[in-house]
Length: 279
Image 1 (spheres, rainbow, N blue to C red):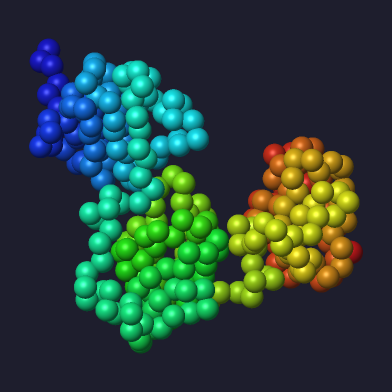
Image 2 (image 1 turned 120 degrees about the horizontal axis):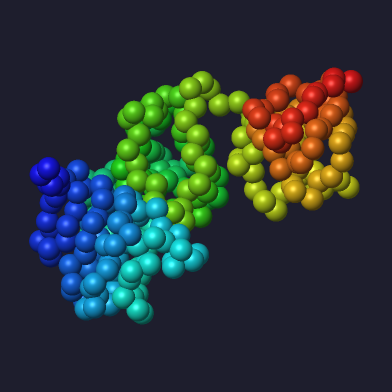
């Protein structure tokens, strides 16, 4: 039986990369190597037998555990003392806006959060560096470099006027935006939004049962693992139960809901299930 021949690409430094550019199989034996952007997977033996390798740059396109670098498979065979630089954004030379775009940003419409839109309001030119941001409805496209440097951004809402298939903005790597929501309908008022990610951590109310609400108590955000009991009464005035609100709860849960409830999120109970009783 003939052996299987794999077709690979070799970059200018001699690294072995899959033909589609997705997987890095082997880095060259050089002192410092920059993994090309577009690579998503680094083979477990990519760094093996590379004694001269002292430093490596990992692009944002690779899912990399920065809190514990040694937990990444590729580090198993890495040379001792290898310095790893993980880039949350494209390499600097790929983050340069054109002079035309910079001029458009300078003359654009700035919202209250610092985001910049084109004069006709149809393009988001530059994102806002805030924790949670809703792109304005009516926006049709987002510039590819709009969110470069938005390191605070964790939750992003994209309106129905900007279809997902048209969205190609770079959102950074493993340590950047975590919650991205594409809407297929107009935004709802914040108090009726079942997405728990849309909140500010220091603006919450915690009841005696450890259940967490929005500051105005109109949204039940979630019950942490410290929540105990087989029943819970949601207070009158609550409008929304957020998605997966009681997912961490162990055991069957009876949830008593007031007449004020208008929105109930998805998968609100834990693995043992539960039932809702309207009062």
